[in-house]
Image (cartoon, helix red, strand yellow):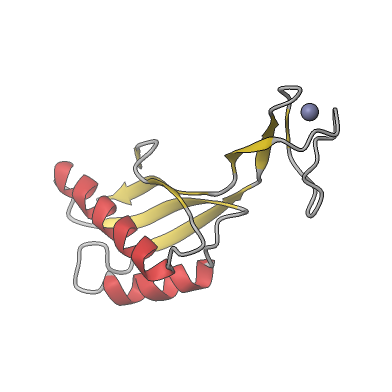
Length: 128
Ligand SMILES: [Zn+2]
C-alpha cells in the first residue's frame, strides 16, 4: 500500500461534480503509480467528509467508466466517511456538531470554523 497524505485535498464545494472529482482522483492515482513503476492499481482509499457533497455511488459509476483502459481498471474503491469537526472562534474548543445544531456546546458561540468534514482526499492506493 502506498500512503501519501494529501494526495488530493479539495474543498468539496457544492458546484463540484462527481465526474470532475473522479477524474482528478484517477489522474493523481495514475501519476503516483507511474512514479513507482506500478503495473496496476488495484485499490483506492478515499476519505470523504460528511459535509462533502459527494455520493459514493456516483463516484463508483464514473470510476468504472473513466478507468477503463487504464492501469487502474477494475481497482476497488474504498470509501471512508469522516465526521464534521468545528472550531469555536469564541472559546477555542473543537467539537462535532449534532446534525442540525451548529452552535458551540461549550459557550453557545456561533462563530465557528470548519476544521474537517468538508474534504475529499485520496488517502492511499494499492499498486502492483
Ligand atoms: Zn465556544
